[in-house]
Image (cartoon, rainbow, N blue to C red):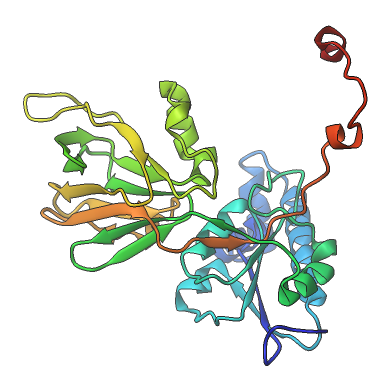
Length: 326
């Protein structure tokens, strides 16, 4: 194999605990897990079957790594303690959210998302089947497979702390109380009381931000592509009062733009990314955060695009719309 590196790369397989593993850890024995599930109208056989399917795909991913490569296997809980190398190739086996979890720990390492259960998971980010992994790893190492850089969002606090996310960053209260802050975008400044706000990327435009935009009929606010260095922001349930407003509740941020938020919350103010509240950063009274497009993004290895049917039928006469509609 002709490699671009002086030494063989390292493949890092990342996964997360299955539902069965987490239940077993919590309840101690299979019998206790079975009893727990039965009280909730579920069957342990179904949960265990999904566990076996997932583990089989993880084992297949490990077996697909070329023999001369170095290798490592991590769980999502290990990410904050692991030091990734510049020549690592990341293989994320799991749901789309796993790719988002690992993205903030990387610096341009290629990421291959493997979908262990296409019947259950959409595969927006985990686009590959495990049986294609041996050839794909070779192509990635040789630089023969295209990659795409998905834009990320970054929050920089006034004390120097940084937080990046692939989907969105949330600013608000960690309780159900109202979040109080002063928000500014360019020359527009407003004191607000709300359920918090999110700043989303083009990748995040398929999730939380999409739900908000659909409710508001504001689809045009969302980034047009996950590769676009553009963000959208939405304030959730802003409350108008004698001291707070609700005019600056959504908008877009271009590459060099920023949304600045100054906290007027006490101990409960937080900032977190991609829904991972355990990685939250405190946002106490007087703290300020600047949110914009991150300097670097996620280097995702996409699946090969399927040829469009129209390309194969080029030159053929198309049927009238009424005929095609059936």
